[in-house]
Length: 461
Ligand SMILES: Cc1ncc(COP(=O)(O)O)c(C=O)c1O
Image 1: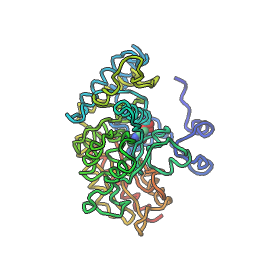
Image 2: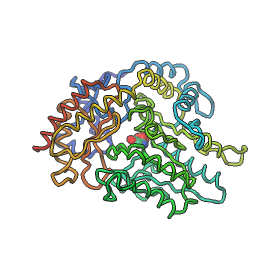
Image 3: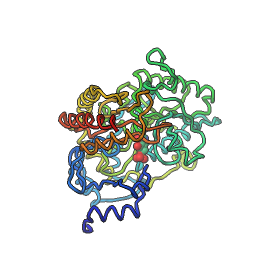
Image 4: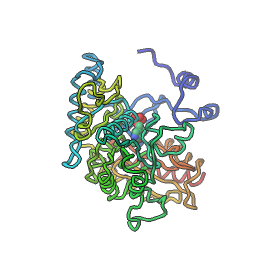
């Protein structure tokens, strides 16, 4: 290991050479300083000065089992020593065991089949790219003579940063600088009941927003539509939990028109919402599930696209007929990453962390909801996936300066949260919480106490 650099030297090198995501670098010419994070343990991070922060953002929605889990590190290290790499054109034990584990854990039913076939990638974006390609090829091979290629997603949804995944993403500020995007992606309104885009209210609305899928499929022509993609609970777009009948209705609509349902569980999977996978809340079986993030809790990068045996069957042909999946990912099925995932999943299952997410999530939701502040519009969430939407007295989203003051005050109080970014037109004043699923009641109290202080500071700024 090279000798450790001190924080000032790191900041100097970083300022000259690193390009940080979603960050205006000119801020580094003023008082803004990025934090040098040094180490983590449990739900806590320590900066280069030794100051502790409760990581209520859970990294980037992904550190589900918390920091400092040696058994994940040992599993990855042992695998690196034994066999660091061979392409997944052949077999390696961790990838095979992980695929079998995913097949065991994901649901299935008679109509849609079993989610039993896994294609590995490095990230959620790539896993979504793979899902789109699988959907298009599957539909063309299922329906020769038709050209089912369109993918319908939702405004405010997020599916990744690569061009296909970005095309599915419905967040205007992330898309515009990179247009034109990939053709064939369409969007409908999200089930954002707090600010219903259709100006309706649940349940009288009859969930009109889900019927937009039906409308778009009918108007575009079902013979042109390959798939629908949704996050069960929209994450970065502001933690939007759908009404209970939303996903089952969407499943019905897809079934009626032979459209594949892709469920992006990149954030919601692995216990985050209080079930192992969020789809279980509504008993919905997808045709494809996309996972990443919590599959390794961030210890190493990994993504996976899991499809049903029925989808996979469309790829069965004879060698040379071109019906096989025509893509390769150099690091797909990477042995140490899969070994880390297996160790991470062992922890999740052994400690039944989705149960803690449900219990502490409900406690945290109640505690945050009980805060009486004029700048809180709504507190919402499911399990340990929560949001606090900040508002002006008019009800509009709170201005950026006050939102920034709340976030900074939370950080000074030792609590790190996420923030919706580039997702809506106007200020992105929704603070997002996605702490490790090991969060204790005392840590939840610490988050609630920090919000009390920070909201008071934000209200006065
Ligand atoms: C729902 C969802 N899908 C896909 C992605 C993309 O994953 P990655 O950043 O690993 O490419 C993200 C990342 O935040 C996500 O939240």
